Image 1: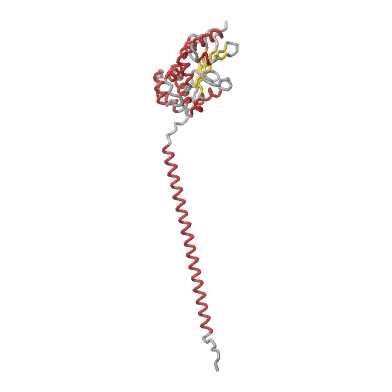
Image 2 (image 1 turned 135 degrees about the vertical axis):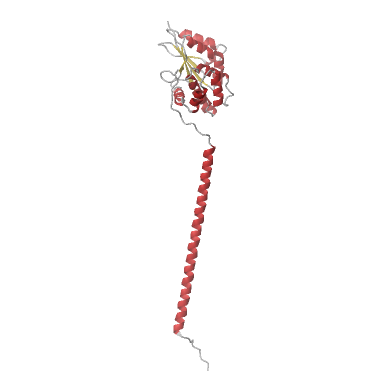
Length: 275
């Protein structure tokens, strides 16, 4: 007769074996946790290194960009040229006005080709009207063409005019700048304008250049531009003549740019002169 064989063995030994298995499982779990912790640490370290590298590259790029930029000349203490009008909106040309002499206002932009045409024909005429006392002549230097042409040449030339006025050579500088006006949009450089200032008789060229590069007259030039709308000036050249105690009259652009701009200026002054 067959019978089923019962398991044998010592119960105490069986318990010890089970404890050993549990210990091995706990040890393996602990080793996995340590490996996971090491892996997390490695990832954090790699990410940190990558961030440091990126920041270092960005810093290097910023330094290169900063070093590649031209050094900016600090803004000088703002000055007002000696021939400035009382309201700070133009230059009074040399001369002692006669009794009853009107005031002639001339608005120009150093990049304006029509201004260059007008200056070539009648620039000396209005200088003579001032020096002879026939009119008080005020020249206003505008800079609006910088926006139209995408440069800063009108501003630069106008600041150069103020610096030339500081040495008594405003009219001469203005005539020479217009006589050498480049193609529209090309503009002037400081070197160009220094050469014109020298031709105009500016004696201390280093002082002139320091004023231009330091923008010592920037605020004054801007203040002239700011009066443009209030004076009803929409373009250049614009010339007005105002009798003493009378109303301002504008000389037409056809007369300024026509066949006889000299006669137009002289006639306007004669008509506006009061007894």
